Length: 165
Image (tube, rainbow, N blue to C red; front, side, top):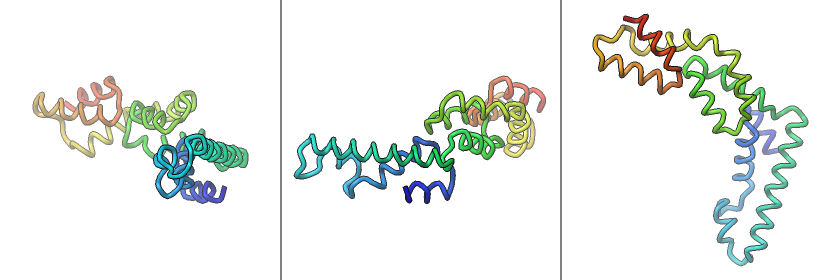
């Protein structure tokens, strides 16, 4: 519990991220993979029982932390989107949040508030990076790939490159 509170004091985590960190910290020195597969001197049943006890304990700690309001996935998703919305588009943010184990409904709710800003943030990012319109198709494609890699929609990219010329 103390480890969970100490981690959450530094920054917000999703439940899945915090679970992973707690399991890594609570695992034996050989690492979680070694503890589950090659713990010397323990039969396979004992190894799996220890891993099950550890996972159950971590889940109890996560439930307690969540009940106390220290762990909130909605707050995590909103903060994540707020801090990264100027640099990344909704597709990239959606992917990153899903990778962190956030529920799709929470992702969409967090992205909804910043959806209107997608064009403005993409334009600001494009201006900061490129400063001028593309002189040829090769440069235009490079600029489109840059914005696409940042997770902006094709419609927004098309509008930016069209207005920039």
